[in-house]
Image 1: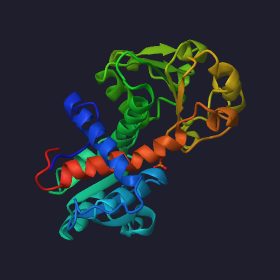
Image 2: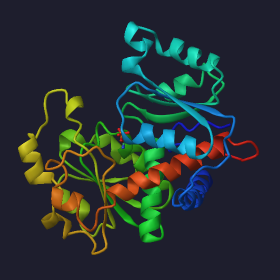
Image 3: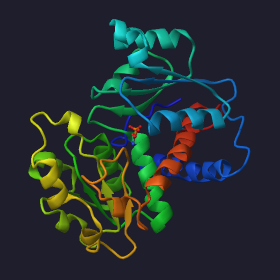
Image 4: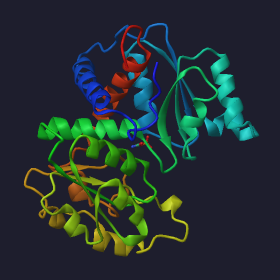
Length: 305
Ligand code: CP
């Protein structure tokens, strides 16, 4: 097996293999009976040190649809709450004989760290502000399905980019696949060092979304703002929020994405979130297919990851 730690070091061929496999998996999840036997006899554990709705449950469903046994450990209800270390938690899980560990942690590099201690396949489900590779892959899949291609598309990523692992995985993945990436938001939420990644940075959100094929709106991570949000939430919504009026600047067939959870009325208005350009629920649906693809490619016997 091969670990899935991030998109920065994933090859274009590997990304395409995941997307193509996810297309196949999507056909399976549309059927009434979803159960496959691809991963029968395999055990997967979701170890989540941070909260999750989408990622944790879609990994669980993905594993179950493929016939694996899946268990969940949430830090808040585990012995982590008694002070057990990350390393000891990993060694304990490993001793149970699991084949894959899907892990979310607040520290950058946590998934990489895990690979030093366990033989199981490690899949990063989010490490601090570093990477969230399966989110990046499901976003690529959503763009490819809607626009038919990723290369040459203008993708605007707007919102709290500073704290966002979703932004970083999207940027690496999109640039590799040949998209043009424009970041939009206040100076306080876009580190200028990100220019070195090969993106354009705009502090007028209108400039970021002008003629965009895709507008990916990211959550303002209020819980991670060290000195409160600047501009204030009310100002942010007025100056940078994506609403119907602003969206008219983008292409006519623009795709609006948001990884969730949303602060509705802050970074995205309800008319856009539930409007005709929104792919938010499609992203969630694609999340199951992408996680099935990643699990089968890394875990199935005889399948090359
Ligand atoms: N998009 C995403 O990672 O959502 P959750 O935090 O609910 O998993």
